[in-house]
Length: 147
Image: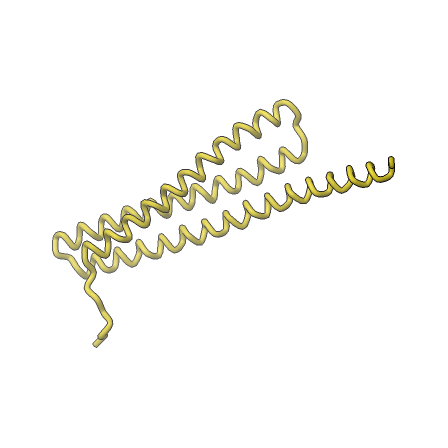
Protein backbone atom coordinates (compact mmCIF):
# COMPACT_ATOMS: atom_id res chain seq x y z
CA UNK A 1 0.00 0.00 0.00
CA UNK A 2 1.37 3.40 -0.98
CA UNK A 3 0.69 5.94 1.78
CA UNK A 4 1.85 8.85 -0.39
CA UNK A 5 -0.51 8.18 -3.27
CA UNK A 6 -2.72 11.15 -3.92
CA UNK A 7 -5.79 11.06 -6.07
CA UNK A 8 -5.49 12.94 -9.34
CA UNK A 9 -8.03 15.76 -9.45
CA UNK A 10 -9.19 18.34 -11.95
CA UNK A 11 -7.46 20.99 -9.82
CA UNK A 12 -4.10 19.23 -10.15
CA UNK A 13 -4.51 19.02 -13.90
CA UNK A 14 -5.67 22.62 -14.15
CA UNK A 15 -2.39 23.72 -12.53
CA UNK A 16 -0.35 21.84 -15.10
CA UNK A 17 -2.62 23.11 -17.85
CA UNK A 18 -1.84 26.72 -16.97
CA UNK A 19 1.89 26.00 -16.66
CA UNK A 20 2.00 24.34 -20.08
CA UNK A 21 0.05 27.23 -21.56
CA UNK A 22 2.64 29.71 -20.23
CA UNK A 23 5.49 27.61 -21.59
CA UNK A 24 3.82 27.49 -25.01
CA UNK A 25 3.46 31.28 -24.90
CA UNK A 26 7.21 31.58 -24.23
CA UNK A 27 7.92 29.19 -27.12
CA UNK A 28 5.68 31.23 -29.41
CA UNK A 29 7.48 34.45 -28.45
CA UNK A 30 10.79 32.76 -29.21
CA UNK A 31 9.46 31.63 -32.57
CA UNK A 32 8.30 35.15 -33.43
CA UNK A 33 11.75 36.50 -32.57
CA UNK A 34 13.29 33.93 -34.87
CA UNK A 35 10.90 34.88 -37.67
CA UNK A 36 12.05 38.49 -37.39
CA UNK A 37 15.68 37.40 -37.32
CA UNK A 38 15.18 35.26 -40.43
CA UNK A 39 13.86 38.27 -42.31
CA UNK A 40 16.83 40.38 -41.20
CA UNK A 41 19.33 37.68 -42.15
CA UNK A 42 17.66 37.24 -45.51
CA UNK A 43 17.96 40.95 -46.23
CA UNK A 44 21.59 40.94 -45.08
CA UNK A 45 22.34 37.89 -47.21
CA UNK A 46 20.73 39.44 -50.31
CA UNK A 47 22.85 42.57 -49.88
CA UNK A 48 26.13 40.84 -49.01
CA UNK A 49 26.25 37.02 -48.92
CA UNK A 50 29.10 36.34 -46.46
CA UNK A 51 30.15 33.08 -44.84
CA UNK A 52 29.15 34.46 -41.43
CA UNK A 53 25.62 35.17 -42.64
CA UNK A 54 25.37 31.69 -44.17
CA UNK A 55 26.56 30.15 -40.88
CA UNK A 56 24.03 32.22 -38.93
CA UNK A 57 21.26 31.05 -41.25
CA UNK A 58 22.27 27.39 -40.78
CA UNK A 59 22.40 27.85 -37.01
CA UNK A 60 19.00 29.52 -37.04
CA UNK A 61 17.55 26.65 -39.09
CA UNK A 62 18.65 24.21 -36.34
CA UNK A 63 17.13 26.43 -33.68
CA UNK A 64 13.86 26.73 -35.61
CA UNK A 65 13.65 22.95 -35.92
CA UNK A 66 14.24 22.56 -32.20
CA UNK A 67 11.62 25.22 -31.47
CA UNK A 68 9.12 23.38 -33.68
CA UNK A 69 9.87 20.17 -31.75
CA UNK A 70 9.48 21.99 -28.41
CA UNK A 71 6.14 23.41 -29.51
CA UNK A 72 4.93 20.05 -30.80
CA UNK A 73 5.82 18.27 -27.56
CA UNK A 74 4.27 21.09 -25.52
CA UNK A 75 1.06 21.00 -27.54
CA UNK A 76 0.87 17.21 -27.22
CA UNK A 77 1.35 17.58 -23.45
CA UNK A 78 -1.39 20.19 -23.28
CA UNK A 79 -3.69 18.00 -25.36
CA UNK A 80 -3.13 15.00 -23.09
CA UNK A 81 -3.76 17.15 -20.01
CA UNK A 82 -7.15 18.06 -21.45
CA UNK A 83 -7.84 14.41 -22.32
CA UNK A 84 -6.86 13.42 -18.80
CA UNK A 85 -9.25 16.03 -17.39
CA UNK A 86 -11.99 14.58 -19.57
CA UNK A 87 -11.26 11.08 -18.28
CA UNK A 88 -11.53 12.32 -14.69
CA UNK A 89 -14.80 14.03 -15.59
CA UNK A 90 -16.30 10.78 -16.93
CA UNK A 91 -14.93 8.74 -14.01
CA UNK A 92 -11.98 6.95 -15.59
CA UNK A 93 -9.46 7.74 -12.84
CA UNK A 94 -6.87 5.07 -13.65
CA UNK A 95 -6.81 5.86 -17.37
CA UNK A 96 -6.61 9.55 -16.50
CA UNK A 97 -3.53 8.92 -14.35
CA UNK A 98 -1.73 7.10 -17.17
CA UNK A 99 -2.58 9.78 -19.73
CA UNK A 100 -1.44 12.42 -17.25
CA UNK A 101 1.86 10.55 -16.82
CA UNK A 102 2.42 10.61 -20.58
CA UNK A 103 1.59 14.33 -20.60
CA UNK A 104 4.24 14.90 -17.94
CA UNK A 105 6.81 12.93 -19.94
CA UNK A 106 6.04 15.01 -23.04
CA UNK A 107 6.43 18.18 -21.00
CA UNK A 108 9.79 16.97 -19.69
CA UNK A 109 10.89 16.19 -23.25
CA UNK A 110 9.77 19.64 -24.40
CA UNK A 111 11.76 21.29 -21.62
CA UNK A 112 14.78 19.16 -22.48
CA UNK A 113 14.64 20.24 -26.13
CA UNK A 114 14.22 23.83 -24.93
CA UNK A 115 17.38 23.48 -22.86
CA UNK A 116 19.27 22.17 -25.90
CA UNK A 117 18.00 25.05 -28.03
CA UNK A 118 19.17 27.54 -25.40
CA UNK A 119 22.63 25.94 -25.44
CA UNK A 120 22.84 26.34 -29.23
CA UNK A 121 21.60 29.93 -29.02
CA UNK A 122 24.14 30.78 -26.34
CA UNK A 123 26.98 29.19 -28.30
CA UNK A 124 25.94 31.17 -31.37
CA UNK A 125 25.98 34.42 -29.41
CA UNK A 126 29.37 33.58 -27.90
CA UNK A 127 30.83 33.06 -31.39
CA UNK A 128 29.35 36.35 -32.54
CA UNK A 129 30.73 38.17 -29.50
CA UNK A 130 34.12 36.54 -30.01
CA UNK A 131 34.25 37.84 -33.59
CA UNK A 132 33.38 41.32 -32.35
CA UNK A 133 36.08 41.15 -29.66
CA UNK A 134 38.65 39.97 -32.20
CA UNK A 135 37.78 42.87 -34.49
CA UNK A 136 37.95 45.33 -31.58
CA UNK A 137 41.37 43.95 -30.60
CA UNK A 138 42.67 44.42 -34.15
CA UNK A 139 41.35 47.98 -34.21
CA UNK A 140 43.06 48.69 -30.89
CA UNK A 141 46.35 47.23 -32.14
CA UNK A 142 46.19 49.29 -35.33
CA UNK A 143 45.44 52.45 -33.35
CA UNK A 144 48.36 51.86 -30.96
CA UNK A 145 50.73 51.24 -33.91
CA UNK A 146 49.69 54.51 -35.53
CA UNK A 147 50.51 56.42 -32.35
